[in-house]
Amino acid sequence: MDNSVWRLIPLLSASGRVQMAIDQWLLEQHLAGKIPPTLRFYTWQPAAISLGYHQRRWPEFWQELSWRGMPVELVRRPSGGRAVLHQGDLTYAVVASGFASSRLKAYQTICEFLIEGWRAMGLDLHYGEAGRGYIHNPNCFGTATGADLVTLDGCKLIGSAQLRRGDAILQHGSMRLQPDVSLFSQVFGEELIPVQLPLSQGGDDLIATVIDVLSAAACRCFEIDLEVQPLSDEEWQAIADVEARRKKEEGKYIRYATS
Image (cartoon, rainbow, N blue to C red; front, side, top):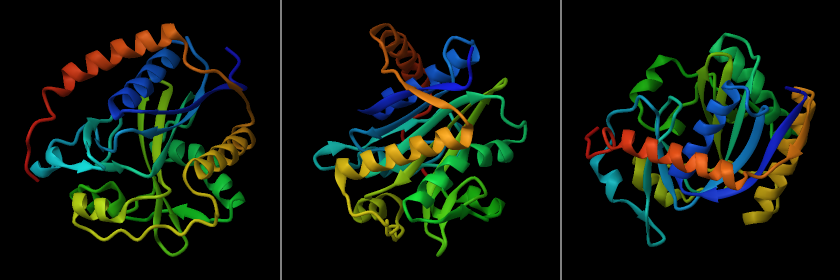
């Protein structure tokens, strides 16, 4: 398989359960050698809180949250890390292979396209420096580790998580573009200081600009070409099967819990 040409799946807006099933399916298919390395961007509809794969405790009231008249979905990621609120954000996902065996080194290799792309948009980012104490904070955006990207004044813009299967890696991450400060405070009980983006656009125009710039940066950083290829009907059916499997597994864990 020619790894110099990656697949670019067009922007998708869907529920968290669907999005996580897609990411898991992409990793399984790439590991089996059935699809090329893949880059995609997506948004969460309705708003959701994603839990890290190993996260077993969270506030009970998270299961009662709503935003704009819709329940806030609670969904488990296939990757690790802590809870992330997905509202007003844009998520990226990279599924590829051939990276360094070191988890942090692979993170940083993949994150280079994010750093270069945001620099092209006028925002300099660097890696966070939090120590191991971060594991006691249920909020992924409450601290910044070496796998996260923060602005020069310390505001976290991108939080990423990773799953490795053999030589294949799924890395996905949330970019907070237009977060609702009050919802964030309601969820985590913390004040959110939004990153001041150096872009004048908002809404769909902002998302389109970010995707275009980051896609171009990925081509440069990974020395690849991107081929746009939407998910086929057959692939959607396979993803539905993964979603059903994940839903059954999640039933064991996503219940009322206390922090």
